[in-house]
Length: 317
Image 1 (spheres, helix red, strand yellow):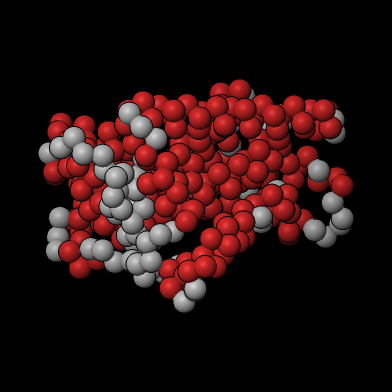
Image 2: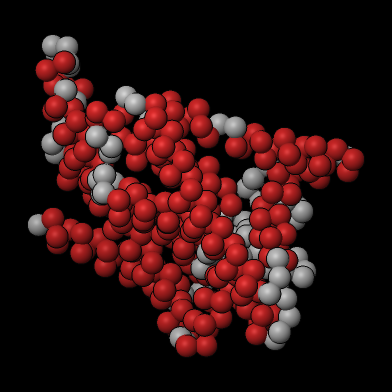
C-alpha cells in the first residue's frame, strides 16, 4: 500500500511537471522574479554556454553567474542530449529530490522516536501525549514527499528550469547523507554535498554549523562530553568541507584558465551589483542609497546574514 502511494505520487508529480513544461505555461512564467533571478536563470545559462563555446570568457560581462563546472556540464549536455531530453532532466531531478527528502524525514522521525523511548523513564508522568507517535514514521515522510512534489513554487522553478533545482537536489542529498548514522561515509558524503551546494550557491556555507552539530549527535555518548573531541571533530569537519570547496574552486580556475569567475559568481552574490527588482530587499535598499555608503552597507547586509547562523544552529539543535 505504501509503495503504491509513493509510486503514484511520484508519477503524478512527474506527469504534472512534464505536461506543464511542454505547454505554453513556461512562457507565462518566463523571467518571473518569483522563480528566476540572475544567479539561477536558465536563459543566462544558455547565453553563458554560447559564449563559452564561442571562445569568449562568459564572466567578462555581467550576464553569466553560474559556476564553471555547471557551465561545462550544461555545455556537454547541450551537445549530447536533445532539447527534449534536457527539459526532462528538471522534472526527473525534482522527483528524485522529493524521494531524498522522504527518506531523510523517515530517518529523522525514527531517530527521534528511538531517542524518546530511551529517555522515556526520565519523562514526567502524563507527558506521553507529547511524544512523537509511531504513526509519524509513515505520515510525516509521506507529507514531506507530497509537499515537495506539489508545491507551486517548486513546480514554477522547475517550469522555469532554474538551476535552483540542482541546488535543492544537493541539499536534499546532504540531509539524507547526514541522517544515515555515525559512519565515516555518512559524514564525508554530507560534507561533500554541502561543499558542492556552497560552490554552487555561496550562502549555503551558513548551513555548516547546523550540519556539524547534527553530525555530532551521531557520535558515541561517551565522547560528547569531551571538549577535545568537539574541537577535533570541528577541525576535521572544517578541513573536509574547506578542502573539497578549495578543490572545486581550484579546479574551476584550471577549467577557465583564470580566476575571473570569482568576481562573476561569488562577488556578484556578495556585492549585488544587479539591481533588477525581485522579491528580496537588496535591490530596493541600494537603489535608495547614496553611492558613497554602498560599500559599508553591503558588508553590513552580508554580516547580518552570517551572524545568525551559529546561535540559531545551537538553539535549534
